[in-house]
Length: 136
Image (cartoon, rainbow, N blue to C red; front, side):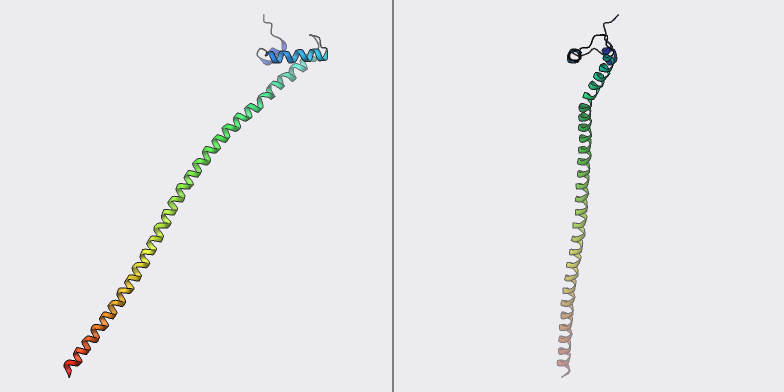
């Protein structure tokens, strides 16, 4: 046979020294006897008090876990976004470089075309001049 109190039966474990001291304080303050029916209510309230005292720790632990997961997910998203931005920037730079090279090639082609036309015109004029000089 165990010396388990009704309170310890409710808890499913031995009462802590602090819990015993708190129950003795209630007994003294209210002038309760050991067989008073009010003990059942006090035991239940004490039991729920112990449960509710665990909630802040559990909530803090869960909040820390969720915060860690959120940070990890945010870091992953940020890294992926940065890589995507780098790839988009590289594509944009390549596109602009192609456009600049194409424009420079067109300008150069136009310059050579003008030079070719001028050289052709000069040769034509020279040919006409030589032809006119031979005809005289």
